[in-house]
Image (tube, rainbow, N blue to C red; front, top):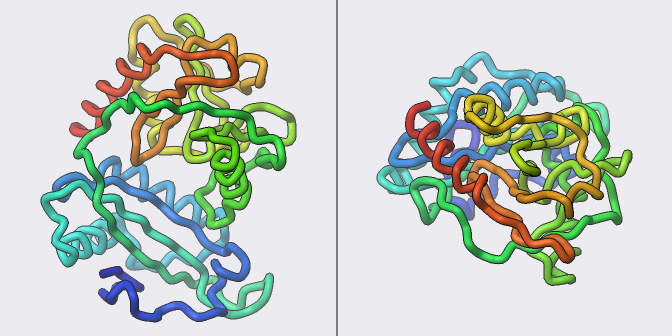
Amino acid sequence: MINFNGTILAEKETFLTPNNRAYNYSDGLFETIRVINGKIMFWEDHYFRLMASMRILRMEIPMSFSPEFLENEILQLIEENKLADQSVRVKINIHRKEGGLYLPTSREIEYIIRTSTLENPFYTLSEEENTVELFKDHYITSGLLSTLKSTNKIVNILGSIYAEENDYQNCLLLNEKKSVVEALNGNLFLVKDKVIKTPPLTEGCLNGIIRKKLLQIIEKTEGYTIEETPISPFELQKADELFITNTIVGIKPITKYRKKSYTTHTAKNLLAKLNTKARLD
């Protein structure tokens, strides 16, 4: 079952038309959320990121869209799908109501909420091979719009196809300045000695929730220095560790880039702190 504008529908029911603006013009956003036994992880951060993104895209936010309203919509759908005692991935899609061409006839929105199950209740460190390469066919444009979780992810799609065709598990994306911005599915962190770097939002990387949480954690972790600074491709092979972050996996180490293999000591340390923060927030 899904939630479409507050109505619970069977997933196979037709509820979108060919005139949908997200389909035609990528006039939409999405938010991916982790829910554990009925608790939404980092809900306040997800909610405010979604509201800020809607404002940036000049969408009309309904008066009813309070944190309490959306939280209730999510939890009701989880209950309807009999997932209340499980680990759940929730995806919220927001799109502008249909009508118009590039210029919409309305700034009002519609929303869809979907659920699927997750394997683990909290974050675990993957020991799977995770070999990456630079994706250089197309670039992320630095600037505010690239920081949003919009429905325009064509560079990530093409990068994913490139990774599959060349037997990589992931790719790192570049911006027009040839700086490393992020991975296909999350933010990038680089560790060298005790300095941890991640690209600033001005480089065009996603304004990730786990990125934000790790910045807070690292600032309070003795022995490490955090820097939000552009990352050159030349730094990758000099790093001790590289890892990717997103809401679903938490922290995923990169095991190999070209001839360089990486350790996971810092990732393991930070993952434990992230799980603690997830329980307490």
